[in-house]
Image 1 (cartoon, rainbow, N blue to C red):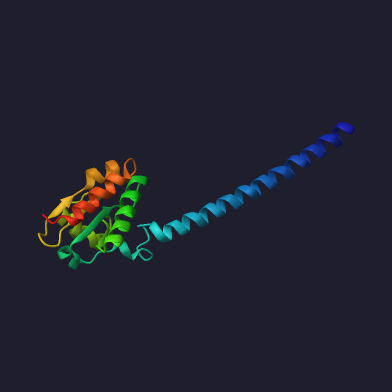
Image 2: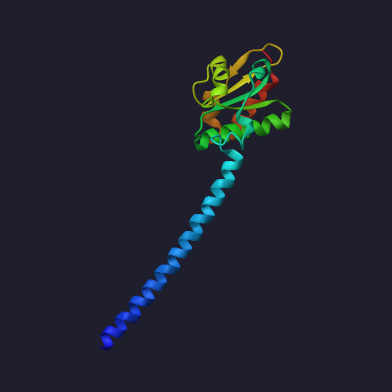
Length: 160
């Protein structure tokens, strides 16, 4: 009888501990969901109503600046390429265009720039020339950010 009573107390203690553990897990899941939702509201290209930056009007094809093309999903490198380019554009007072190529209204712009995936392009004001910095940007944005930013800035300042 003592064994049964001891086992019952042990089982009760374990189930209580499991409930506490599940409550903590639930809190963590809810907290993670809140963080992800906040990130979605600031970065997510899948929420066009929350991210007006991803919609680009047809009239911008004549506008000089930095054009950052991407799809609905962005990897770590894509995010760094875009965010650092945007910061530099703000610093240099250059127009920055965040273009989601998966949105129907941006398909013609992507076609004009020949952007079929994640890309970083510079359109010069005087010459109208478009320079493709995609390979350099994706190769260096994370591993050599200083070289990436220097190349981007020097390209913006040169109007060949």
